Amino acid sequence: MFVRLLLILLLTKIFPLFSCELSNGFYKYTDSNYIATSPSSINHEDYDVILIGETHNNQLHHHFQSFLLSNFIAEGNKYSLGLEMIEKNKKIFIDQWMKNLISDQDFKEKIEWDSFWGFRWDDYLTILNIAKFNSVNINGINTSQSIINFISEYGLNEAIQKKIIDDMPFAINENYRNRLLSYFDQHKSLSNFDEQKFEFFIESQTYWDYIFAKNIVDLFNDDTKVISISGTGHIEYDNGISWQINKINPNIKVLTIALVNYINNCENEKISDYVFVGSNYKETKTIGITIIDSEEGVKVTDVKNKSIAFDIDIKPGDTILNIGGRKVNYSFDVSFLLNIYDTPVWIPVEIKRNNSNLIKIIKFK
Image (cartoon, rainbow, N blue to C red; front, side, top):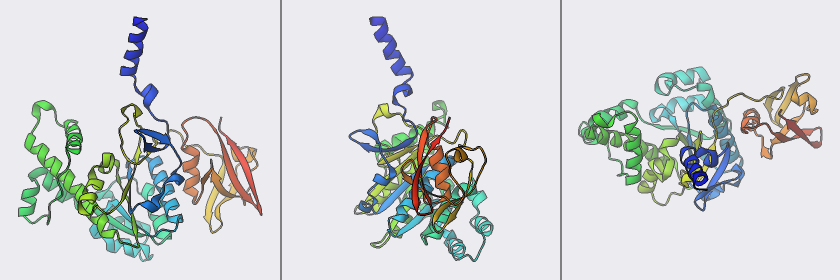
């Protein structure tokens, strides 16, 4: 009995993810736990600012962001979109692109995407196009990387004295400080720990969060809510951007949605109000259709012979309405909703054919 109990304790200690790691899906933090729910359950009417975090190189996260953005816009609220990926001073080029005065490629070059951000352009272009198509006001909320680097090297006081920055961020809490310390330790061994460098590191991260928050608050007004997309580290644990927003204007109601690769639910610690768990695509699932966006919705234009779609009688001309009970607004939704599940599943798909709505069952083997 003792040996059995010891074995259970050891397994729980050494392999906690066996029982605690949440599978791919969407969760709400409630009653000190994460409960599976649908993105449609988000009552975003109650919030002024929605902070969405991401892992920059996770394509699944980008698809989910697009899915969220299109659904929020569809509810009829007026939004501004704030992006970490673009500097605030590039607004003139955003507006030129919104008015079709410059091409996608010219826009990418003028905002210096490759040198400033560097992550896959195509992963973000869908989000930009959704905002453009729906006349959402797009804004960069980032600052020059040289400013962050200067503060990291010399500190906030030196940056103020040299007039590199105009104002100080609000002080952070102890929890955020300890979390930043854990990040710092990943790069600095304890034997070489430099307390001054750590303080400057904290100051640079705090100023970064403050600038994001300040720019987001500037976008908010009584008629317009704000959706912001940044790295998840900037919005976790009610620290970072949300902390700074609360200090700037405590009346602004903030909702946080963190997109993470995995989560250990044994800790029962709130990362954000909602969490999307999604490790990156391992192997993209397809069902053998070609689709386009149209005024009527996502249209099937071709079906590959002997494909999954062929076997379940999906035909050219069909309009895809929802997959797994989740509404399809754009063609990228189809790829996202087919690939959100970890294991082989049967997924119901609602299509419109002529004047009839039909249910088909996709069967992944």
